[in-house]
Length: 181
Image (cartoon, rainbow, N blue to C red; front, top):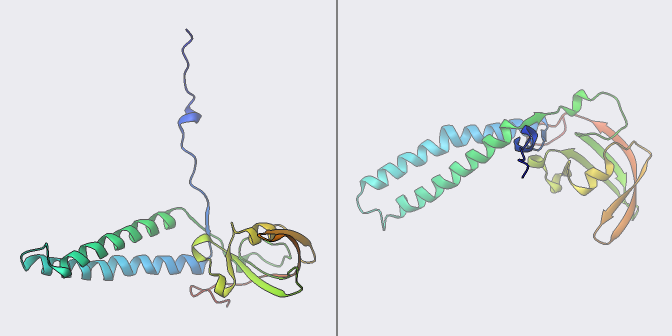
């Protein structure tokens, strides 16, 4: 019976997915991580230590809640660390003068009902529909990417496919709060 061997490629894990982020989004996540590591976690550890020194831990609310909250903070720290380790920061303001849609673009378009809409294509961790910030992997962003002002693109929606016309494409700085500069 022939002996089979695996190639080295078959054992190599796939690279982590791209984590594009604007400089403002990166700063926001970095600030949150620093706040958790330098302020919230140390204060909570003090409270837990104090509560543990009071004796019976089984009915000690400060201790029980503190341990639960500490696990939540540790999970968030781990998540933020992973996200920031794989980040690729892309500054939309450095894109230059182009009317083609790429990551970081603010796109004005006319939807199928004739309404003007504006979205900014940002990283997954920065998406906030209330501010018009959509993730680069969202259906609207995927439909718009690599097209230009004046193009009409098809967008698949739950009610069917609609045509949207790209009216304007611009690139501007996005601050940590998400506002254009």
